[in-house]
Image (cartoon, rainbow, N blue to C red; front, side, top):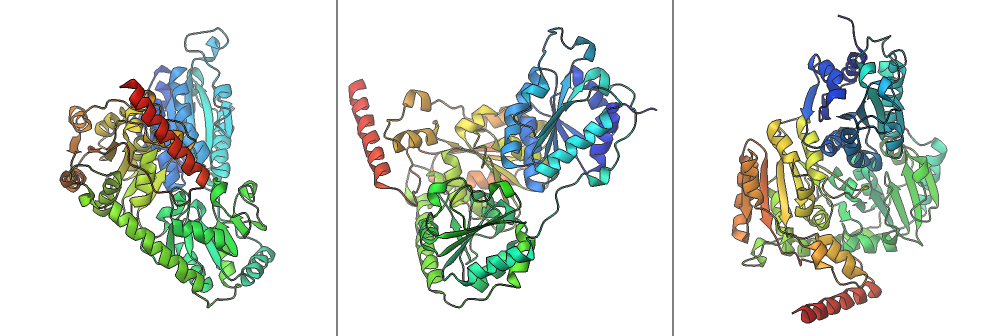
Length: 564
C-alpha cells in the first residue's frame, strides 16, 4: 500500500518517539487520523482544542521532547492558539497541526475560512502550509527542527487534499530531530567566573529551570563556597525542601530569608533563570548570569558578567577552578532566618488553626504530605499558585510544572492530562483555583474517557482571589461583582462525569478526602472549600503598598455601608 503525506508525517513522529497526538477530530483531520490508526501513536480525543494544546505542552515541559496537538479547519484550529502560548512562553517544543479545507476552496470565502499561517504567526517559531506532496518532507523536517532548536511552537497547516495524497518522498535526516545538546561555557569564561567568585565573601546561588539535572553540581558548589541555594518557582523541584542548602524561593513565591540574602550578598550567581520580577533582584550587588540563551543575559538586573552556557557542564568546569571558602557567617544567618520562616509556614498549614474553616495553606500541605514521592504537581495560576508553591514540600524526585511565564488561568488540568498519558501509573496532581477549573472543566471528561487517573484539587473560594489582592495592592476596592461567582458541588460533578469526587468543608474532613481520592484508580476531584479572604505572606512589602492596602480596605468598608 502506498503511503500518503499523512503517513509520512505520522511515521516521522513515531521515529522520534512521539507517543500521543492530542486533538479534536474533524473532516480535514480524517486523513491524519487514518494514518494514526495504523501507527503505534495513541490518539487522545479532547473535549476542547485548548486542552489538546495544553496536554502537548505539559508533556513537552516535563520531558523536553516534542509534544503534538491538532485542530480541524477554522474554529478547531483557532481554539489551539491560547493553549499554545503555554509552550511558547515556557519554551517547550510542540508541533501544532491545523487541518484545512482542500486547496481548490482557498480564496473563495468558503465556510470556516481562516488564514492559519497568519493566525499562528505570533505564537509560533515556524509556521507553514504543506502545499504539495513533494514539498511535505522538507517542511515536516523544518518544523520539528525549529521546535527543538528554539524550544517553542512549530505549526503546520494541512490541507485535506494534500495530506490524503500519495507521498512524494520521505523525510530524511530524521536522526537530527532531537533536543538541543548541553553547551559548556568557554575556559576563559569559567576562569573569569572563578576570579569574581574568589573575590566575594558572601555569595547566593539562584537556580532556575535550566538547573534541572544539575543537583549534584549545585550541592558541590554550595558546599565549596558556603553559598545558600535559592530557587525560582520553576526550579523548586530540583532538590528536596529539607536539603539544608535549599533555602527557599524568591518573590511572592519565596521567603523573607531569601529576600534578605539576595539583597545583602556580595555576589549573586544566577544559573539557568530569566526571573522576570526585577524588584526582587539586587541593584547594587554584582551579578553573574549563566544561561544557554544569550538573549536573556543581563535583561532583568544590572549584570557584571553574562556567560553563554548550560548549567551542568559549566558548573563541572567551575568546580575544578574555584577556590573553596571556609567562612560560614553568611550561611548561618540565612539558615537561621530560613528556619524561622519555615516555622511560620508550618503554623499556617496546621488544620487545627481554625475549627470551622479550611485554610488554603492546609490544603497544599496535606496534598504534599500525602502525595507519592515521585508525583507530578501541575499548578494553576492565581492566588492558588501562592498556596501550592509556598506550602508544598517537594521530595526532590517529584516534579512541578505550571503556567509560570504565560501566567494563564485554567491551564493545570490540561497539562496534567498530557503528563498522565505518558505514564498512567504515576501520580499526577492538578492543583486548581475554582475559577481556573471552571474555564476548562470539560477536560475532566477527557481524563475519564481515556482513563487518565489525574487527581484534581480545587481550592473552592467562589472568587478570583488574586484579583482582589491585586486591586487592593494599588489602593482600589475589590470589585466583588466581577470577582465573586457561584460554584457547583465539584465532587458531585466528578461523579456525574464518571469519575470520583470528594468534598471537604471542615478541617477534620480534609486529610480523609485527599487520602481517599489518592487511593482510587481513576480521575478524581477533591473539592476543598476555603475562605476567600485569606492573605498570602509577603516576604517584602514597602510602605507605599501597605498604604494602598489600608486605603482599599477603608474604601471597601465604606462601599459596604453605603450599599446596606
